[in-house]
Picture 1 (cartoon, rainbow, N blue to C red):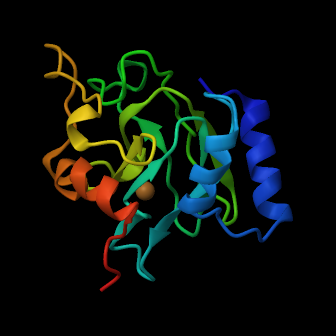
Picture 2 (picture 1 turned 180 degrees about the horizontal axis):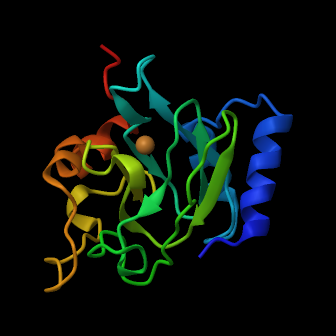
Length: 190
Ligand SMILES: [Cu+2]
């Protein structure tokens, strides 16, 4: 679980910097020369809302990163969280069995950020606690470049007694094959 220090560090970086997210190409290149499991760059996912707060979404909604990459959620507006589907957070697991779950808690200040490093390959689905029923969810595929969809570890059926992801949230999650093909998938801001 992320601790408060990690949270504050991530927030501090967001307030201090205007750094652009590293491209997937750069992440792969950095990862190729590094040790497996070591940090190899950061991808930013924005937590967005329209002007009236009627639509809420993660941008990009689907992304592939190499093992060891850091995901950083950045609050644009409204109140959001980045929370892994996991029993620790009240849901059936939708992350790899060996991967630690995370929960940012409610983020309320524009520019605030929260980060986790993802070392275990596989599929990670997460949601926004206030907007799970509104379909605010996202998918991260941790996989080296060239990985096939059939090689990505996906969770089994939800254990009995644990809450499943809402239909609205499941509906926005892009196919693993599409995420692997396109690198990042964005919900059209219509
Ligand atoms: Cu939200």
